[in-house]
Amino acid sequence: MRLPVFLTPNFITISRLLFVPVGAYTLFKNGGNDPTWQYISWFVFFLLGLSDIADGNLARSRNTITEFGKFLDPVADKVMIGTAMISLSILNHLPWWITIVILVREVGITLFRLSIIKRGVIAANKGGKIKSTFQNFGVGFYVLPLSENLYWFRDGFMAIAVILTVVTGFYYVLSAFKSQK
Image (cartoon, rainbow, N blue to C red):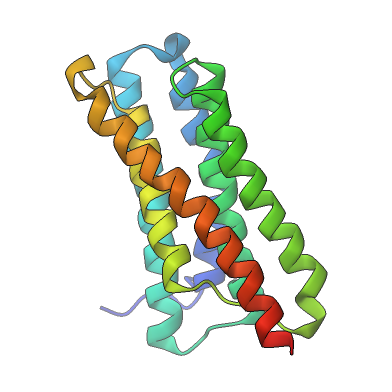
């Protein structure tokens, strides 16, 4: 299937950023406890997550990986996950400490990336991609109106996401310093 020329990986990434507020809006609709709007919100965030996969696949298939894209794509991911987590914490659906731990790591790594960008962008590694997957699914389970007997699964999934977030953050910083030597 031939895609329109304007449909570039960076266009998809920027579109993802622009549609994040739609996910937040749907999450807060009717006080944040309306199952219909929770499913709609989950679907919006799911589509945003799919767009992350699509822009990466498109960039590789067209051989159009850019420094701008390597930088913007993880920023868009952080905006998406951060918006969802802050919204869920405001609604008292997700503990604030989880949101703070994950966002401190994500913002810290972003600032770190900005501080070393003159030496070249460090692309996301496999550990970071696994961490993002766990974060996305973990947050998705908090967005969905799950039965209380599934909270153990949701909470366990998020616990793994938190651990991966912290571990991959340390690994990212260490690997950046090793590559600069």
